[in-house]
Structure formats: C-alpha cells, structure tokens
Amino acid sequence: MGASIFTLVLGVSIAAFFMWTSNNGRKADRERDWGK
Amino acid sequence: MKLAKVKIEYSSGTTIVDRVTLDPATGQVHLAPRLLGLLSKMDESECSAAFSLEYRGHVLPVTPVVNGGYVVALPTDPPPGIRQILHAVATPSKDQRQQNGRYLHTLSAASIGGTVGYVHSASSWDLSTVVGATILASLGVVLWYAGFHAMKGE
Image 1 (cartoon, rainbow over the protein chains, first blue to last red):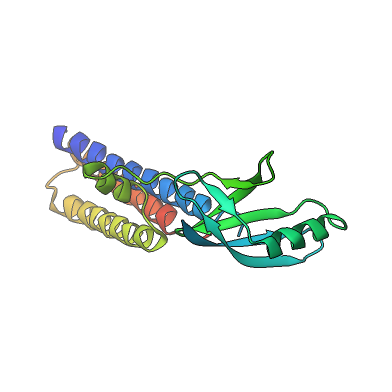
Image 2 (cartoon, each protein chain N blue to C red):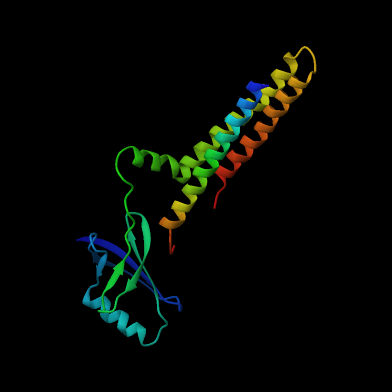
C-alpha cells in the first residue's frame, strides 16, 4: 500500500510540475509577443 | 546605446516601421527627427497609435513622457547562476513544452502498461491489488492529460 501511495504522489507531482512549467512558458511567450 | 526596431500602428491601418536608438540603462528611446515629424503630422488626422519596440525578442510598449521624449520599460534579465538555470527549466519554450509533453506521454504509457502487467501478475484480487492497479491506471490518465496540456498549441 505504501508503494502505491508513493507512486501516486510521485506521478501527480510530476504531472503538476510540468503543467506548472507549461503555464509559465506560455505566459513568458505571451509577454514576449506583446503587441504582435 | 543600441539600435532597436519600432512599430507604430494606427487604427486606420497605417503602420510605420523604423529603427530608433535605445539607451538600455534608462530605457529612453531616441527617435530620428524625420520620424518625430511624421508622428506629429499623423497626429493631426489620426487617433493615438500603438507604439511598440522590439528588444531581445520582446515586443514592449513605448510610452511618451512629459518632456516630449519616449521611454520603454525593459525586461530584467534573470539573475546569473543556478537561478538562471532554474528559470530556464521553469519557463520552457514551445519546443521544450512539446518535449515535456512527449515525456509525460511516455510515462503515461508506462503507467498503463504497468497496470496491465500488475493485474496479470497478481495471484488473487485482493484490496491491495485493486488499489495498486487503480492508482496506476489513474496516473496513466493524469499523465496523459498533463502531456496533452503541455503540447497544447496556441
């Protein structure tokens, strides 16, 4: 059970991290492309 | 002093593209007398224009100041060292987001494959097996969605 919870936490953390970086990247792109 | 490209767009559709001198320390924009004359002439018959300046890939709004000059707020560079590396990781480009999306889809496929292997290797369907299989399958979906989100085009 402990291994399952560890897997769940690790997987959700990876997904959340990459979703966060994607949002940051899009925001940076929008700021860079302002006015286009 | 650096040279920078500016774009002045009017509501009627008239667009002026020119180069100006930019002071990166103060953000002051120095326009050529020819361009200043053109702007004052256009102001007689046009609404206020959208004035933007291109600097290091950023397109920044240029604002007039009271003494008749123009200034632009220049973006600050990320601090050097480890924070610059972290900044690069935290703000990926479009291509890097695509790669992150592919990586997440690979992990998703591994989770789905792992679920199948886990279920088939279980000798009996006890609570632990069901929970483990459910978590792996759910992770497969979550990681697939995260990869889908990372690959989303604009």
